[in-house]
Length: 336
Image 1 (cartoon, rainbow, N blue to C red):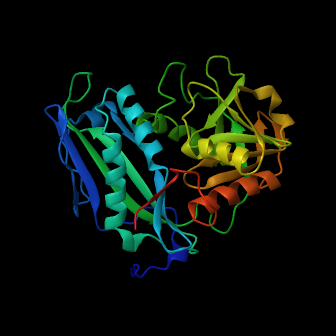
Image 2: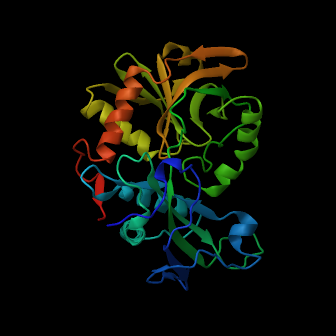
């Protein structure tokens, strides 16, 4: 298949309109059959529930061209499961998980010419999302919804190579106990925008949030889970308010099954972060972003950046995604 005539190496991490996207509407208690459309415009009421009360959730995953030329997606079933959980928490009708995966497959396949070639450093970002679409003025859930999937080719998250991040312990809270921190709700990200802009203005790359109840345990950043390395052990914070990152869950299995490491999912006290040798932020966009420094109100904790263990974790997981290494059963969905 001939790819689009694009300078793939010059792509940034931004939106590029592609040919087709998937749309399905929920009305009268049921989802319609859904279809692909060329129309990239969303038309809704000025009083749509998503505009008034932020009733929306989304997902993010990637499609890749593997070394042998196939187009694949990485664990879309887990994105489907997580989106269904998000929808239920926001009193939205869950889009059926099997249909979610099929919608992703159809959308990627329909835009196969936009999937960057292997070795280009670029990938295809896939964004499924849903929102309350009908007019709601009282504070209550919508009765009509729209589920959509669009795709866009993106360059590497870090142009010019990976550089260790400098992050700060935040004075603001990301999520409350028993709140919505564990679901991928748009409102969670909206409330983090002030803080991330402030962090950038102060010279930091990200905010590290602690638990809002006691402010004594590490949780995650505004857009990624956090991981730590101590010797041969990979440690990730555990909390009911942390978003269950698919990348993090995959890295834990990679660490254990491919690299022979010990893994720990447990509460991580703020007071112990200086005991770790490596630290990273993990998510779909960059897989792992190495952390060089955490600043805790003037106190600096330094790490190895892209240390040997984080490098091995990164190389192994991307090797699985790109087809250079064998994948665990069910991790790779072949699209074309």
